[in-house]
Length: 388
Image (cartoon, rainbow, N blue to C red; front, top):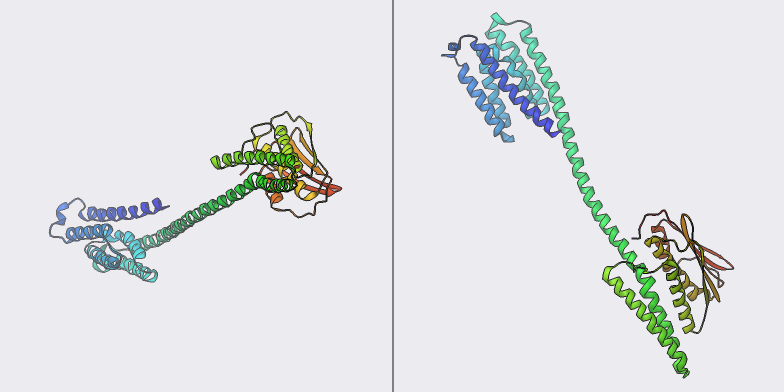
């Protein structure tokens, strides 16, 4: 639209030059010598020069004065010959553009009156009704063109404003997305720390207290087993922490899902034995568990087993737990059942984090209560969405 406006302004200047040259050509006719001793040529040169200076250099505060000088020079040409009447057309556009609305309209009417009736007074021999109607039609066309130009100019200004708003909105959106990304990353790191280092440190703390109690009873054999458990858990968590710090990503499973689940179960069983409160935990595999599972889904399944077993050991007071991992044609499921106290329905931080993990791969988390508690995780294998 800006190019259209520039083209219209350029067309206005070219129209002015064309009509001025046309008036000179018609005035001289076939006799260029007619210009000798006539004021037409000095007036035409003065008008062209003044107009050119105004288009190249015309501060806004001088625009009305410049227009007045141009109008006076044009009036001088019209007084000499009615062939210059049609320069009225670009002058009317200039008056509408440079002057306030009503002043511009009044000026246009005055310019039309000069073009229509000054030749009648000074050159009555060639004047007809068409000499007044012609300039009137040209003036009306000039007003119509100006209205179109002003509409396009307003539309261009509105588009520029909208574009600026869009740029501002895009910048604000980028800041918002950046902040949301930071918050999402903080949440992910929080879940990772909770599911790895925090759980390991909790186990070390509990087993160390049990080892102190064994030493107080002078039960060195049990204390030695408990210290070995502490060392094993500490080594595992140190390795996890190093991987976590190295790439700030969830640790790779490094093995199949059934193998990772067996390790989770063994660690949970060893911890409870070290605490002197053993829990029977078993693993059941259903379906094609040898089939490859996408890394994001596998990671969620293993983390779900860790969180569910942690809750069983901490809160359920269960004697037995069963972990069931199933691979179906279009989904995988994990069920963790225990025969302990029923779930009270309130999600703690761990379950809320697990729910977010499962949702990130388009899965579902359900906690069923009754005779014991069952945590059910279902994830579609068609999901291509990765964890945050």
